[in-house]
Length: 418
Image 1 (cartoon, rainbow, N blue to C red):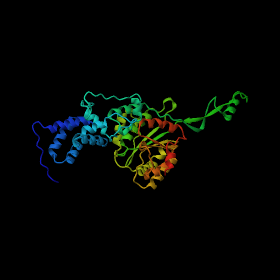
Image 2 (cartoon, rainbow, N blue to C red; image 1 turned 120 degrees about the vertical axis):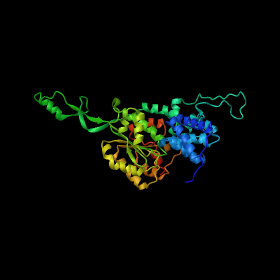
Image 3 (tube, helix red, strand yellow; image 1 turned 180 degrees about the horizontal axis):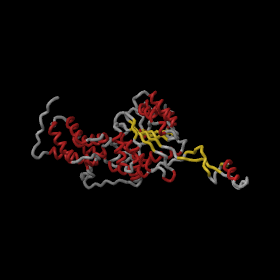
Image 4 (spheres, rainbow, N blue to C red; image 1 turned 30 degrees about the horizontal axis):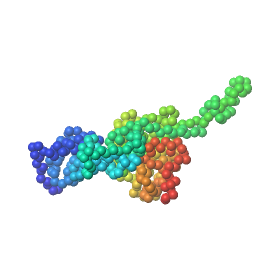
C-alpha cells in the first residue's frame, strides 16, 4: 500500500469549515448526522491525506454514509459541492419550476434535487440571469397549471425533493385500497336471501306439527381475500419500493374498515434474496415499521435475481399465504439477467396460485415503453394486469385494477409488441 504524506491543517483550517457545511447539507438532504460524524471526518481526512479526489470521496463516504439508501444523496451532494466547479448552475437547474406539465426541462438525477435544496437552503440568488436588463421582472402565467396536490400526484417518485417526498408519504398514508369480498360456497341464514333452505324449513315445520309458516332462506357467505405484495428493492427500484412500502403499511393497518379491507396483508421484499417483512408492517408507526423492515432486508439497492426469489416464494410461502384466493401485487421493473425460461416457469406457477396477479412497473413512466428486456418478455404473459407504478396517481388507479377483474391495464398493447 502506498504511503501518503500526512495532511497538515492550519490554525484556522478552511477545510474544516467546508466539511462542517458539507455535513450540514447532508443532514438537510435526509442523512442522520451529528457532530461526532464531522469530527470523525476531519480526523479521517487528516489521517488519510488529501492526495486524490477518489480517496477523499471514499473517506467522507465511510464517515457519513451508514445505510445503502443514503449513497445516492451523498453522491449528488458531493458532486455538487466538491467535484463540480459549476455546482450552483446545476443546483439552480434542478430547482427550476416545472414548465411542461409536471416534468422538468432537465430531469434531475436520483437525489440531485434534494442535494440542491440542501445546499441552497431555500435561498435563491439575488442576481438576475446573465443578459437580463437591470430592473427586468420575470412573470409566470400559472393560470393553466395544476394545483400543488395534483402535480404531486403525477410527479415521479424518483424526481421528488425531500419536502415533496414527505408530503407524498402523508398522502399515501391516507389512501385506501378497497376490495370486493370473495363469494364462498358456504351459505348463511338470511331472511332476505335468494336461495331457499329446504332442510331448515322442514326442521322449523316439525316444531309446528308439520305446518310451514315461513320458508327459510340463505345467502352465499363472503369473506375478504388476502393481499400479497412482492416488492423489488434492487438499486434501480429502491426509491419506488420505499414509497410502495409506505402505501402497503397504510393498507395493512387499515384492513377491516367499513367491511372493505383485506383479510390479511403479507409483504415480501426481494433483490438477491427473499425477505418476509409481514410482521414489521404490523407496527403502527410507519417509520419504525420501515426501519425494522430495512434492517431485516440486507439486500437494499443490491442486485436483482427475480427468478430465484420467486422460486423461493413459490417453494416456501405460496401454500401458506395463497391458499384462500389471494391477490398478488408484484412491484418490479423486470430487469433480470438470469435465464428467462426459469423466470417464466416461476411466474406461471405464481399466476396459477393467485386469484389475480397485478404487475406494477415504474418503467411505464416512459412514453413509448416496449417489452424489449428478456425478463419483461418472460413475465408479461403470466400476469392479469400490467400497470405503471411510479407516482401517487398510479397507486390510486390500482384500486380500479383490483375491483375490476377484466382490467388488464397495458398488457394487451404490450403483448401485441412481443
